[in-house]
Amino acid sequence: MADNTPRTEVNDDLVGRFLSFNIGDSLYGIELPYVIEIVGMQQITVVPSLPYYILGIMNLRGKVVPVIDVRMKLNQEQRPYDDKTCIIITQIEEMQVGLIVDSVAEVLSSTQTDKMPPPEIPTNAENYIHSIMHLDGKVVLCLDCEKFFSSELKM
Picture 1 (cartoon, rainbow, N blue to C red):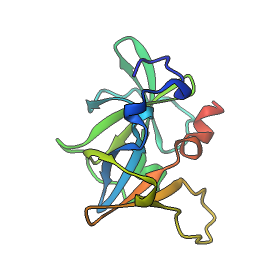
Picture 2 (cartoon, rainbow, N blue to C red):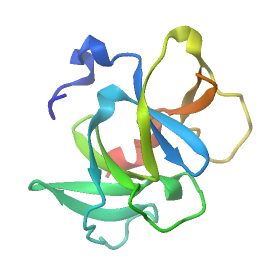
Picture 3 (cartoon, rainbow, N blue to C red):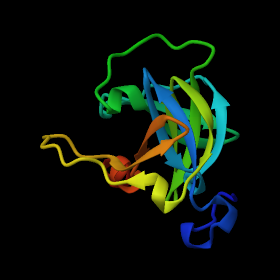
Picture 4 (tube, rainbow, N blue to C red):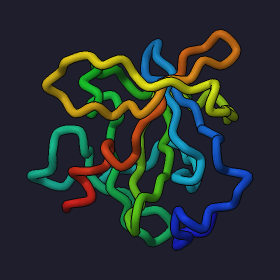
């Protein structure tokens, strides 16, 4: 997907496909049209006064990209990065954002019958989960990118 391709002009081959990634024992998915590439850990420059889960910025081939630690944003216990830790470069609206995840699993395809809405559980936190998929005995929590990035898009 080209960097400036609007979501409405996304290749039909990407619709209904998700990149799955691990955070601890949980499997998450992000819609493939939002994913630009996956890179290994990079040097991150700390920027003062950002929310705790935004680690800073990185230089990706001359472009400045903010980097979010998904574990921290999801209020999960921190752990050291290892050789499986990577950064998923995503694009929402006109902004690229790097997501640090424990590891990338695979690309999954789904149909409407595979997905169901998340249970309604009262919580004070924003609900970033847009649907739950059951594929090959796995439960995949699919992130709602609009909600997940809502505060970053206001920056």
